[in-house]
Length: 309
Image (cartoon, rainbow, N blue to C red; front, side, top):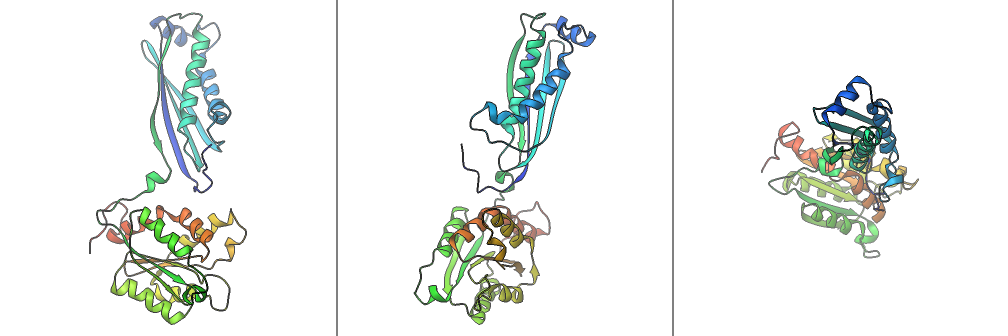
């Protein structure tokens, strides 16, 4: 089974189609209510709903999902029955297998109920016709790569007592996402240096994104959130809230992070925890959805391409 523990929940939908070819006389019997076993359509609908909810018990590599909605609709043609199944869920993984299973079981149920009167009946196909949800639907593309910096705040790392792990991990994650990392820097927990660095990235270099790591705790030298609040012009509270909520499901200590996020000019500044695990989980929660903010900054809307400097 695939590990989806790092994924975030998103709204997922899928629609599948199955087709059963039958004799024209069979369509007439269905319409007239003369199938010996009874009307196959409502029975097939119930079977489809049950199948969608129990897909993980039928197909080994499917995850158990909290299904929110299942529907199954039928269209009677002259020589065919079209079955359309639809499944919805807020989940970490898609629901296409649930929709396909629902359509398949509905077709098999119809087959079972009318096989006595139609020996030539045939299930001719089952296919996925639509799916939505997941990170792929929230992945923005940019003609010009985003430009970023990673700023590490730590007295011990700046003094050479420790090696930086979180900052380098952030750099690699950004590069893997197609972001150009123009600067990576380690500085001590000095408010003046933090403020100067953030202003330099936003006002002089005019970078798109600045990710900081460290200084978000409750120690006497942890001042990153306070400095960030002073530098940014508009706060984006949901960004750190999302990261903390994601982390809280994995460790009870995530609630202790005080990171902030906001915009200065056209630069987004986001505080991440100083630990490798905290930074990694925060990025799992925020990427790639975070990048959509640059579409909004560029045009004031959600669809236009990013501005070019």
